Length: 476
Image (tube, rainbow, N blue to C red; front, side, top):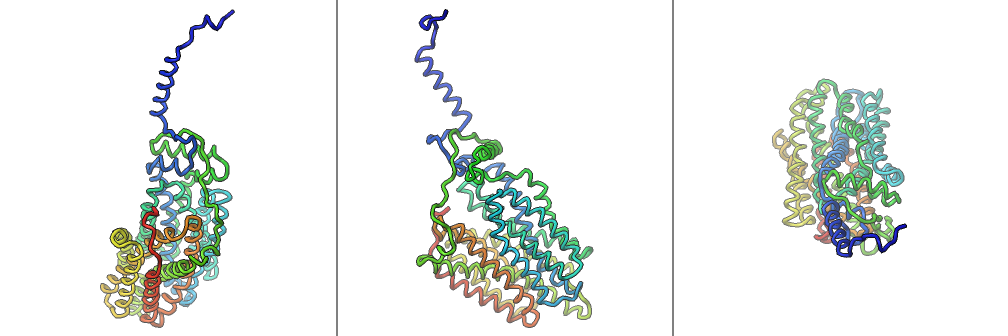
């Protein structure tokens, strides 16, 4: 028989020493949240930006590259279709417009799909479908088939913003602004890669080979998508904290940080309802209408310059070889590459100017530069002067997109930021749908009128931007 008073027990002092020692061990191996609870965003902020985010940036960057490449190729296949099927300028413009129409009508579909089944599932499906439609487009037997397939390509590209959502949900708060710039660089890289691919592929395999091989970055993304992590915030908001914890543990391990101790709770979501009607409330309607026009004008001018560049190159070749159906020569792709490279200095210079003058003044200044470039384009005719002017104009409009993408969320209240940016994106796609009828259809009959329209729209956008409220400096 054992008696309690006959058992040797540790003293109270020994218990205190053991507890202190255990606490020291825990502090060395984990991070402790004093509130015993933490959200996904708090955990991500604690883990910082590390190797996990580098891998994620490369994967999401492939999505942006593929989107950019699909946009860039629209300016190349238009003139090629004239030689293949003798299509009119209106039909060429329709090939571009139907892509943006598909993007516009599919945005809601992809948002609902990703909210229900997860960002990873939606992006994986997007990758498979876009590779399939791109390959089928390269073997389209007729114009009608190509138009249909390009519409499906546009419908699929509507999923690309979900990659940004997934990316943002993994980013520490203080790094979100910098990473927007990183994604813009991937966009510019995709546009440049498309031109390099055209330089190598187009002379030997034509537009069909270029269409098929342009799906390469997205094919790589699709093959790597099984290693893509689902959003921890998505799991947490849907009550699957066990899966969210596994994702957070993976981030901590990849970034060589310690996992938090405590209970995971869902991030607080805005309680007020988000609706387009809220964007037109008495205190916001003026700002909303101004932003809608500026986004429409930005997309109208950006994609217009992309199309105008190739139209000017092809027109120059037609003057040299009036009796032949000549589209692009090697020297044209070299000019196109240098002009496309302007997006990199445009983005970096925009960041510098924003630090000096703020986003609002930077956007106005860049629009005025764009207007000046359009005026020069109506008068110059030499190859060097045209390329140099397009270089400056392309850099300016790329910087404008960078600035308004960061500026827009700062204007709206937290509950309306998502729907505010979504509304602006819809208007941007509308601008992109309209621009082919100026850059391709009107350009054929009057270069001065077509280029002047872009200058006029840019001037109106600069005036509209001048009436916008001051940005929230402390947002990021």
